[in-house]
Image 1 (cartoon, rainbow, N blue to C red):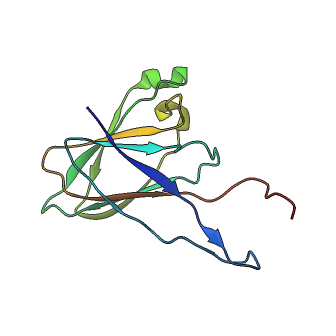
Image 2 (cartoon, one colour; image 1 turned 45 degrees about the vertical axis):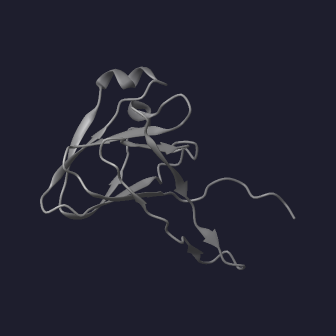
Image 3 (cartoon, rainbow, N blue to C red; image 1 turned 90 degrees about the horizontal axis):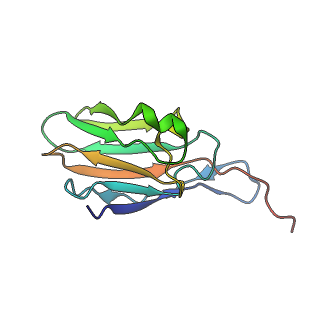
Length: 129
């Protein structure tokens, strides 16, 4: 399977660094391809949210695939229900799903239609100007 890929979107701070804003870019899901979120766990601050818009007429299932980077992946995939409408998913057990390249793979049940995007809080030290 050749997965479609998306990037994690991070906020841009305004000049006083008091307010952050994310201009969202959505990706239409091709159910047969699944999705890879590139660098999903590179931030390591548990702020990743995966937002999925289920535009089908019924609920559907999402499979969060087990990773290959840590022993905790032996717990396997997890399947969750996506209600019709918008779902925001936060991954709590990073090591279960993290791949060696810091990405995560998602599979969608047959009949799923909708959009996806991933957002996270920016973390780290900014370079001194």
